[in-house]
Image 1 (tube, rainbow, N blue to C red):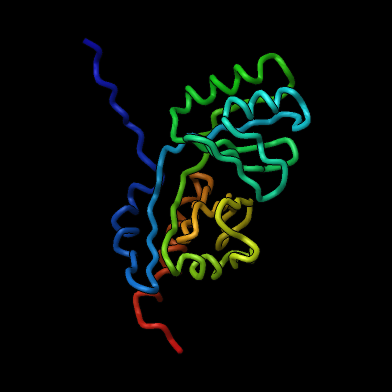
Image 2: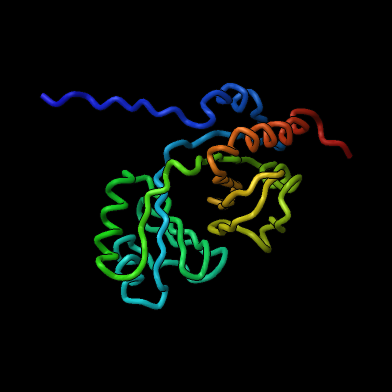
Length: 202
């Protein structure tokens, strides 16, 4: 009988779990903040015009996106454009499996496939007031006419560099800071959410 696997990982924001839960706001001005730790993240570098890029797209189930802000999703995988020849693959599948599959697709051709799952964590900000909270410290135009579901770009929120992805129209945003900056970002967001506990000021 196989020994059970023990996962001893501790997420970068485990110590703030209760504070994030307590910061949640319900109702018309509702907003919640949670950490989604240990999401698989694989960095891919390859010539977008190559047959290799096509093979990687087939392995993911959707072509690699070609323009800033674009994402491509299929099954458990979402590929986010980072640069003309660089993508971040986010996945609910096991990191080792995704990395192995993409390395097989890369073969011996120029490029790279690197598991960077430990490099960042994931914060999820969701609810009717989520956009207003982000707008306190994000330079992007987050209005739906400019930034909607499925869009993802590198930007800053407060003083922290993040990859920002709008996952749905709730709206739900996923923020991917470097793990070493996650504490600072989470505390900034908790503070930015605090005014929504009270009535709206006319």
